[in-house]
Structure formats: C-alpha cells, structure tokens
Image (cartoon, rainbow, N blue to C red; front, top):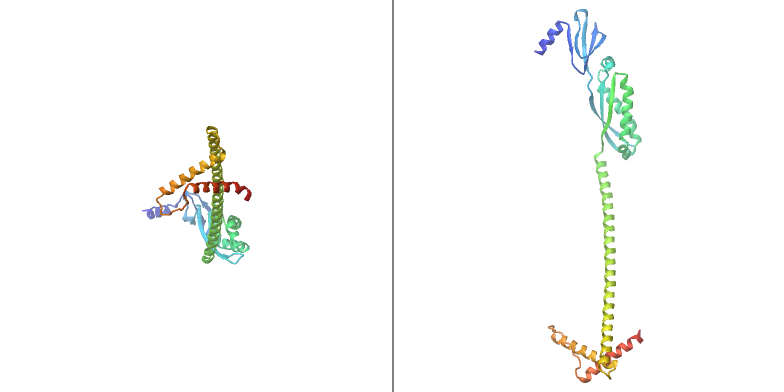
Length: 292
C-alpha cells in the first residue's frame, strides 16, 4: 500500500519528507535545494528529482583504538562520539562525505594515538576527560567543514592488557593488606596497653586494700590492748599481746583440724610450746625493723 501511495505521489510530482529528515533536490543532476519535512512538489517532467535523504537525528558511534602508553603498556581506548548533520549545511553533509563514520574514526585514531603515548598508564585514567576534550575539539574543526556537528565525545572505557590489569589488582590488594596489617598491629598495641594499665590499676588497688587491711588489724590490736589494760588492772601490753597470740594459735590449730585436706602440719604443743611460739613471733616483729 505504501509503495502504491509513493508511486502515485511520484506520478503527481509530490514528495513527502519525514520529520527530523531533509531531502536533497536536484535538477538534471545539479543540486538545487534542501527540502524540509512535509510535502513538496518535485516536477520530474522538467528534470527535478530527490537525490536522497539525510537524517538530522543525533547519532552515536563507538570507536575502539589500541595504542601504547609512555611506560610501554598497550591499552584499548573506547571513545563514544555523538554527532548529527547540520540542517543549514545539509548539502555539504550529503555531498562532501560518503562515509562520515569512517572519517570520524580516522580523526579519533589520530588524536588518541598522538595523546596517549605522552602519558603514563595511571595518568591516562586520571586525564581521560582531557583526552575526550582534545578528541572533541579536533573533530569539531574537521567535521564542521563537512556539515556535521560533534555534540559530545566521551572516553567510556580504558582497557589495559590483561596481564597488566592483573598486576594492578595484585598491587592494590597488597597495599590494602599492608594497611590492614598496620591497623591490626595498632589495635593489638592498644589492647596490650589497656591490659597493662588495667593490671597496674588492679595491683595499685590491691596494695591499697592490703595496706588498709593491715592498718585495720593494727588499729584493732591497739584498741584491744588499750581496752584490756584499762579493764584489767595490773596487766601490761606484753601480757595482752601474749594473750592475743595464744588466741590466734588456738584458732589456727582449729582451722588445721577442721580442714579436709590430707596435708598435715606438725607443731610442738604444750604450755611451754605456747610461750615459746609467742616469744618467737614477738622477737620476729622486734627484729624485723633492724634487718631492713
């Protein structure tokens, strides 16, 4: 049906041009006019005809270019070019270039292969926007004369050689492992410091407790001696201490006897032994300051 309508239209010298498209009108093989979207009369009887049509839509092409960096690493650069024909220069876009894609690809190759060899591999990744801008500027100057507008140029991918990519990943992994090891060592150091501080604090508090315990014992003994001497006339401090030691002696014997363990302690026992033990303990307390 569509072909029938086109045939009838051609017979009636009518041509339809679609939206976002222009038609190139020739007369006896010579360019005459650019036809905008709509219906036009093209009298073939007097040699007029539509030579072809040109789309004004935005087009995109991806260009893959392999080149070598300054540090001798082969990389594949993928550049995405967005371009379209200019309506006011449609005749140049139609007549001057038979294959715009091939022309654009040649300029992309030329710029990339001139720029990348000046850069190290790491710099290529960091300066990809500058590379894209250089490609876009070169394309704009070249393609404008042919009736094409370069809308945008993007470097969408940088692919190093597979072995180089693997080596880069290993370097990155090693660096991250080194950082993790440093962090782990620092954490262990903090734990050890905190543990040492805790042990020191615990020993300090334990010392305070023992000192207070001994002070309480001394205070209790002093109060007992003073109280006993006051309540029992004629007793001296020595008599009170002997009584305290005797009491402690019997308490100790009681605990040993009540213990369920199999170990045994042999102590001399008797009235004379008690006096002897009291004398030994008392002499030990009296001689200790002199030894220090």
